[in-house]
Image (cartoon, rainbow, N blue to C red; front, side, top):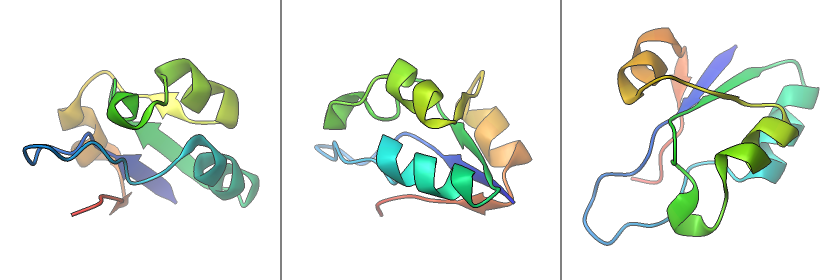
Length: 75
């Protein structure tokens, strides 16, 4: 399954739907994870941390929503 994680857009919402550890677990289970660029910055996670955990950083939010079969958000 392709799982997409967009950046939260609500004002003062800095959390992210998946941590790098969550990405690692889902990747190990055979899923593909697409992260919107800078989605985890507000929670202190860099795009590089997500890449190392097994995610791919999408080119845009539109790509995440277009290609993902499941979207994981905080709200």
